[in-house]
Structure formats: C-alpha cells, structure tokens
Image 1 (cartoon, rainbow, N blue to C red):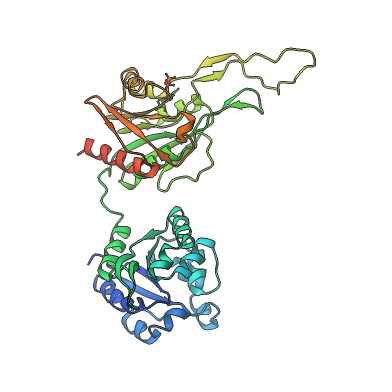
Image 2: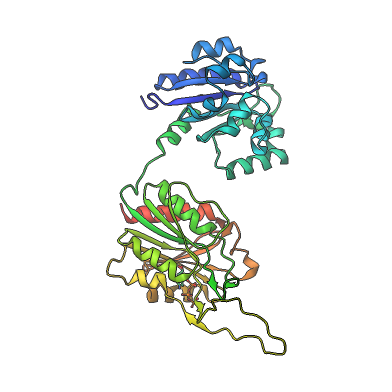
Length: 401
Ligand code: CTP
C-alpha cells in the first residue's frame, strides 16, 4: 500500500465539493493512510461530521477552543503530528486566510502553526478563482512553498457556469499526496554537488565593500533543484537576503577567497555549478581602520588585485568533478564570450545570459539563457529562475544516466 501508515491531516472547508472529500477519505484509507479530519464551520453545512468521522480513522476536530480536545491533543499537536496536511476542498476564504497568516478558527490556526508540507486542492466558482485577490493569494502561497493540486476546468456543481475552479478528482489528489510524500524519483541519489551563489563582498575597510547586484535567486534555485533530485548538495553563498533552500548544506562566505576555500574543501564531488557573481577584483591592502577623509586632500586611490577564478580552478583541478557548469554574465557578444569562457575555464557547459541593465535579469525573477556546450548551443526561452533550475536539473540527470 503506497501510503501505509502515513498520517494525513485532512482539512475540509466549506463548499459543495466537500461531498467529494468522503470519497477522498476512502481512497486514502484504501492505500493505508491514517486520516484525521478537521472541518470548518462552513464544511459542516455541506457534510456532517458524523459522515466524515465514520469514514476516517480518527475523530473529527472542529473547534479551536474545545476544552476537551485541547486537553486531549491541542491544536499545536494537530498541526505537527502528521506527515502532510491536505486541504480538500480549499475555499477562496481559507486560501486568503493562509496567505495572510490569519488564525481565527481551528483550521487556519493549524495551518499557521504547522511545519509539515501542505497540499491544497482549491474548489470555488471560476470568477472567484480568477479574481485578482485570489491570484495574489495563490502566488503568495506558492512562494511560501505550499503545494497545489487543481483546480480543474469544467461545469460547476451549481450549474450554468463553467471554467477553472472545480476541485481535482479524489484519485488525482491521492496521486499528488503520494508524489509529495514519496518526494518523487531521485535520479541524482548518491551524487554530490557543489553550487556557488550570490555576490561576493570585497572589503575596502571595516565598513565599506565592493559588491554587485546578484541576488542569489538563480544559484539557490539550482541548489534546491539538485537536492530535490536526490543529490547531496553544498551551497556556498555570498551575502544574500533570500532564505536558505531546503535540504541543502549552506556555507556562508563574504569574499571570493573565502568562497574558493569553501568550494575546494568540498572536493571531490560529482557536479559543480558555479552561479555566484564572484568579484573579479579585491582591494589590495585593505585598511584595518576606517579610511577618513582629510580636508584638502585628494580622494584615496583604490588599488585592486585579481581574485582567484573559482570556476577555472575547479575546471582544471586534479579532482575535477565529472560535470562542471558555469554561468557567463555578459552585456555584449553573449555567445562568443560564453564559448571563450567554456574553453578558458574548463567547463562542460556555460549558461550565458545578457545582464545589460534593461534585461532586469540581475536581481530579477526571470532569466533568458543560452546553453553553450562542447557539442553546440541552445537558446532557452525567457522563463522563471525556478524553471531554468528545473531544466538544468534535467540536463544534469541526463549526464548521469
Ligand atoms: N567565476 C568564478 N570565480 C571568479 C569569477 C567568475 O568562479 N573569480 C565564475 C562564475 O561563477 C561564473 C563564471 O565564472 O560561473 C563566469 O563569470 P563572469 O564574471 O561572467 O566571467 P569572468 O571570468 O569574470 O570573465 P569576464 O570578466 O571576461 O566577463
């Protein structure tokens, strides 16, 4: 049984699709799962707790301030004592509460208190699903790592209206639960990867530094994707403000030399993806004291020294990883410069992009890259940095299979 002994907290919120939750519970239990139901007040207007409780493997929880339930188990334990929280159906209202961190009933409080994966099966009128407010809430929840299954298109139960908004079918929801709990296939299991990300900060004195506009979004997304595919990933990151990716060992550094040392310490690995925008130069003879301005004197000159090229070092290392991938941030002659970098740095692939300020790539959420390999080139369409990470993940997998 695919879900043997998995503990699923099923939140049923108010909508006509709640009647399908009865079938959903049956399907989950057939596969060995334990289903603990939570119903909102709205849900109880559509199906009775008696019916839900009869099918589930646990009592039905409905009240936030139930003295009996709180003594017995409590909403915090409800939020944590499970492998997955599934919301089916999820109303527009519950999505709005989640996106805004509201906690005014048992279901929303559990969702705010949980650290478990959450899978949402929305069900609502197509106009509500398409409303800009719901679009915003959906985007917020996706960014918060909440997973979705559906909604599907078709006739609404209330009749007359069609469009996107119908709850996914129970078997589709079960498949999404299985994929999430099993984590999908792990084609890179047993492989080790090193990824660099973000900018470097090169100090001038104790308070000043030279930096660049890299956000770390692309490098972090790649590290997370390789980990999702089963690789054991070390991410060496310069100073960034985005959160650490899940399932990855993160080493934080500031300067290029620190980044190089951290990268070399991880060798040997199978895969190296160097995404960091490493400063080409550092300040020679940094001052231990803050440089003061002196009235009447010329501004101090900045002497620069060349930084180590980390990609080049790894690409020519005695312990060279089987697969070495670099990026090339260019503002002109993207393909030509990218090809030259492939050779010079000893990489298998270079992902070249045009970082002229009008492209908004540096620091932004999207990327348009040209993949340059030994066998040729390929233009990837404009896509989100997450999508670039997924496509690169497939390329890496194809190399090891
Ligand atoms: N890189 C690196 N160490 C450096 C500089 C760059 O590891 N000191 C890596 C980057 O992570 C990226 C690739 O090299 O994968 C290309 O970096 P880029 O700055 O675009 O190229 P440069 O080597 O600086 O070449 P140029 O100055 O000619 O653009």
